[in-house]
Length: 206
Image (cartoon, rainbow, N blue to C red):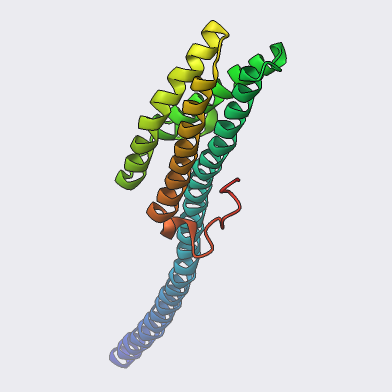
């Protein structure tokens, strides 16, 4: 009798163990399934976060290149404005306001010109690194060197003559062409960052 009871108890314990083991296995499988689902849900979230970061970086690069293009376009206006002020001075109709305007435009042009090459925190410009842009800038810099000397002399001495004006006008045409080439180099060098639409031709200010 005792033997039968002991055997029955052992069988019952074995049965309970199997049941418990089954529940444990089921719980484990449920847990693993939940983890897999959670990880699967995290993958799109992580990918979306990476896409957002990449988009944000691309937007910053595009804005930075756009700023350079805008500044190069403004240099065309500044060069033509300086020539107009110099013409007024040679014609004898210049006053203190004209002289001050010439000085202001001359300073801003030089500020922009150096910033495009070397960077300028105030303009949110980093130093340029692309060889095509640097080459276009260097070609423009050669012309600006001569024009800069003319305007500096006029501003310092407060004197100008028709011969000076003729040289300045010729150099102004070349400098504005140089600014156009800088814009073209920026568009070509950063075409991928700017996208298919780029910035159009509106920034080539005439």
